[in-house]
Length: 263
Ligand SMILES: C[S@@+](CC[C@H](N)C(=O)[O-])C[C@H]1O[C@@H](n2cnc3c(N)ncnc32)[C@H](O)[C@@H]1O
Image (tube, rainbow, N blue to C red; front, side, top):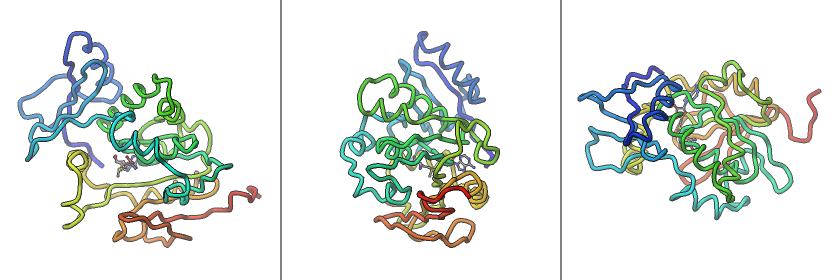
C-alpha cells in the first residue's frame, strides 16, 4: 500500500491545537490545510473526525466512537452463541483466546472480540485510520462502563508489526485478518456511507495474500480470515474449516487445537 492521499490534521479551536499537532507528528501527517485536500482530519474538543471534502454526496464526518451506533448496540446485545466471529476465533464461556488483529481498520471486529473478553492487540497500517482508531480508543477507555472496560482490552500496537512481531506484548493464541477486498456491483451499492468514505481513503489491500504466512507464524493455535462470501481464499490456501454468516465467511486455519500443547 502506498498512501497517496494527503490528509492534514487540523484544530477546530485554540484548545485543540497542541493535541492536533501531536497527532499529526505521531502518525506522520501534515498540519496545514490546502485548497485541493480531498480529506481533512479535524480535532474538535478532543474528538478526531475525518471529513471527505470532495464526496459525491453529503456525508457526515467519520469518527470512531465505541459508545455510539451499531458498535455500542452490538456490544450491549452480543450473545456468544450468535456471533460467527466468536465461533471462528474459538471464544467460549470459559476460554477467551488472546488475539492479534492484523488489519484493525476502525476496530469494529476487535471491539466485538474484546467485548466477549478477549485481549486484542491491533495493527493498522493506514496512518489516518490508525489516528482515528487511536483517538476513539483513548476516549472510550476513559469511560468507567462496560464499553470502556472492553476497550481497555484493546491495544493499538503499531502499523506493520505482523511482519516483524515487534511491539507484541505476547504471541497471540489467534491472529485475525480482514483485509480490504475490492467490492463489485451489488456489494458496492450496499456499502453504507461511512464505509464508502473509508473505502475511498484506504482503497483495496492488493498485497493481502502476504499476510497469511506471518499470521500463521505468530498464531499459537489458529488464524481466522474474514472474506466476502464470493472472494477466493487468501493466498489461494484452503482453510481447515469455514463459518458462514449472511455477507461474510470466516476461513479458519488451524495450527493445533486449543487443548494441545506446543510439542
Ligand atoms: C476491511 S478493513 C478492516 C476492518 C476491521 N475488521 C473492522 O472491523 O473495523 C482492512 C484494514 O486493514 C488494513 N491493512 C491492510 N493490510 C494491512 C497490513 N499489512 N498491516 C496492517 N494493516 C493492514 C487496511 O489499512 C484497512 O484499514
